[in-house]
Amino acid sequence: MVSIDIPPHPWWKPGLDLHRGGDSYAHLLSATRGLLDAVAGVDAPEAVLAEVAGEVSRIAGRLNSYTTSDESQIAGTRMDLPGRGHPLVVPYRTTSWTSVRMTAEVTFTRIHLGDGGAVHGGVTALLFDEVLGRFANHGRQPARTAFLHVNYRRLVPLDVDLDILTKVDRAEGRKLYITAELSHDGTVLADAEGLFVAVSAQ
Ligand SMILES: CCCCC/C=C\C/C=C\C/C=C\C/C=C\CCCC(=O)SCCNC(=O)CCNC(=O)[C@H](O)C(C)(C)COP(=O)(O)OP(=O)(O)OC[C@H]1O[C@@H](n2cnc3c(N)ncnc32)[C@H](O)[C@@H]1OP(=O)(O)O
Image (cartoon, rainbow, N blue to C red; front, side):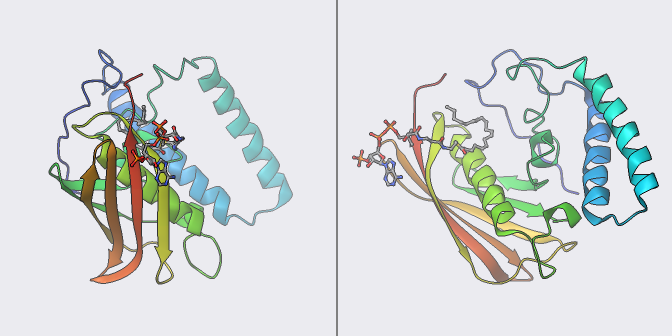
């Protein structure tokens, strides 16, 4: 995996340590993603499911006693980890970054399966909103997604390394238009255009 250091956004969570949790949080995230994949693919006897459900509930309860405000949670702030270190965000890995062009890699797994062996379309849209949104906010004013248009060109496979290419298309005042392609071996599987409108920092 290629790892690059992307500077934090100066207006975003100022003063917060963006490496909180260290390697231990990275391991927790990875184990959690593994659990989600296991649940998504399971067909076990009820007794096994009941036992595992009890263990998972106990573990969740242990973490719940450390729940913090959304401003200080770790999830979503670990820019060094796949998917910003958020368990819901698709675990893409950024591989290059300039102010006008960003590349990343992603590998979908069992939790992302829709039907017919392919990735759920909503998951593809989530990936695009995340990648375009993060790119729209990097080194610029804070901006929110006004629209996101996704074209589904081919079925998106699981367990295959895919490429993401994101570019600034044009800027018009507060409006920034960004495009992205998700491809495999040069074949575009899906592409997207998003409009991001700059807002005041909160
Ligand atoms: C502030 C925080 C931003 C969030 C970023 C978070 C973190 C950033 C930090 C690090 C980065 C890390 C991670 C980021 C990763 C992902 C981020 C994902 C981003 C999202 O997932 S974010 C959630 C979904 N998003 C919303 O929850 C938006 C709800 N919505 C609104 O908040 C307003 O709706 C808004 C602000 C969009 C506009 O409101 P507004 O009042 O500021 O501006 P206004 O309406 O005047 O429009 C101004 C000009 O845009 C044109 N325009 C507007 N909407 C249009 C549309 N749909 N189609 C075509 N044109 C449109 C108008 O026509 C006008 O054009 P013109 O100037 O030419 O007349």
